[in-house]
Length: 233
Image (cartoon, rainbow, N blue to C red; front, side, top):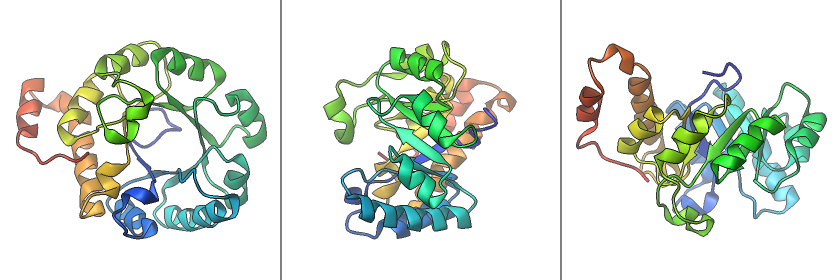
């Protein structure tokens, strides 16, 4: 695992997917369940409202020792002392962002093709989120699902961590990890869960189990353990 990227579950916020529940309460539950990296997305908010949310998220993540990345807003990242930014595919170039943020803060990049993953590494991103890997309503505007073969292709050509996003279910995490993915980025899997703490814990337990797969006799045994598990979107 890349020493700078010490997480394999990346929670992306969207207050429109909480079923009317307070976003900060859901994020707090996820953090209690073990999430150690949160991206504050909420890209439809005006600057001051977004700043207020960033301040809330900074307090929450700091309490749990978790990373906070801010979607696209370098100014807000610096204002609240966040751990980094997450850039859209059409955001400011990574080298420009790096000059502003310095070497210590993380820069994540959203990508929708293997070629974009390669370019993100060349530009200096610390990690990428690639997707949509599987079909999911929230990502259909981005085109057809890329499939796990895209993770495999990307991971074989770059050294930076690749996270899968889009349609992530518990039984699909095995395929993501086998394909070379660092982990998964999720939205509805936790935000829409009846119990966000349990949902986060379940994903993390699955990731931990797969990380220790070398101690298991075969991949088939791992697959058997995943059969009949409930899934999250």
